[in-house]
Length: 237
Length: 303
Image (tube, rainbow over all chains, first blue to last red; front, side, top):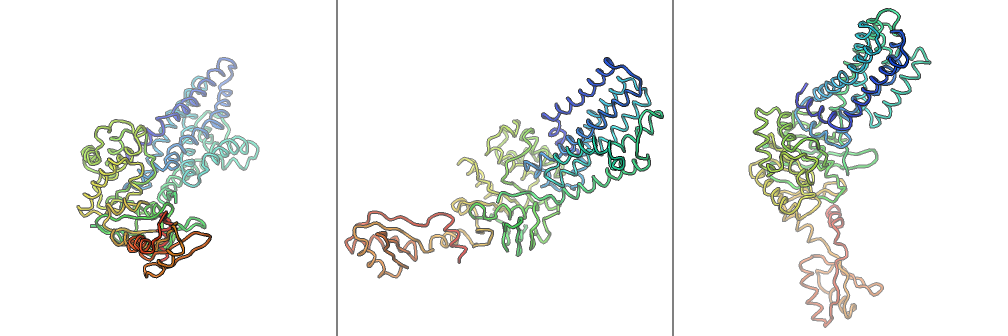
């Protein structure tokens, strides 16, 4: 971890329009929560369903895509990443520092709004905690995965969008077997384990989900560092 | 004292060969990397800078490969051609960040020194995004100098600079060369390189073409056969008078156009008016037929 890189990344990632976009997404969750509470008051279980479908299927993958790619992709695209690469700093340190910022943004602008939305929907303290932990797990995994994707392909955003919108929203809903490979399901498994019985249903066992989450975080971060070390800068000639 | 060494090095991108079996050694002092656009200069500098692995051969700094070796940046300073920097930082913040990333003891003082070296103190609190091209170049230079590197690599550093900034940079690089640092800069302009470099390496179309001090390179470039088209009052008489002199390599008279191939530039320049006068022929027009930089460079490659 390097404080200078954390500072530079935070300024670059959250200094411009991206912060407004992330803020708007966060506000949208709260608006939906308030609207649901006012217009269609239901049981705590209904509230949990709203959170699961809106936050876990759509919002968290999109949020992870924006912060995961935003932490490094713009610098690679415009070539300013040489400022970091021409320094005697381990490439793993660079990746870890950037992920600290990405996960920090997830906590402030994704986990917190999710928790607030759960409170607004009146799901009960234990469920609020469950959704908070679940959202953190999903957000962190998405951030690592999409940052790694940026270092693997120039089409990270497109591939990420396809994954976020098609795989997580659709395939997982229709093909039961695919749920083992759905980050959403891993996170819901943790949420299920914390929340009172019957609030959230998860298809992936808790042990497997935790194992997969830790594996993606650790291996993904390490591999991203390796990829950054092998990053070649395109030349004009 | 540091030495960069490129040995039997090639680099290709898919089917395109950007650098073709180049070997050179760059020691202390100022070396100019000269070649037309697209000759592979940037590719060579990127390989030296450790931003690109060679497809074949080796690129080393004092015997250690620069690729995948971040520790090399403790002695390497690099100014790339691409303009992009962190536009949201001020000039000073950018240089201080560089100093911090180098792990210097007093980043603030090092940044002040570097900004002073490139004369950017006055603009240091403005955002880099608002800088002109020349100012960006200078602040990038400050960022590359902040850790007092023994090796400095600059890709087309004079592009976009006004004459005053150019003089300032020339002076700065001269000082660094005199201090025994290894300075390598690329350029496609011969005058720029010969003004500054004590050693010139010429590359053309990805291949090593020539090397030497500026006198040797200048001689190679001016002493090559030159071709002229001549318009005179009597082309036929002039042609026969010219072909009698050994400094004329060949004469052709086709479709009413007289073309003369001269073996040596200076002798021919003196010969033509004398021969014309003696033969009582008036010269209307003498124009070089192949003076483009590319043809000069390709002549060097053929030899």
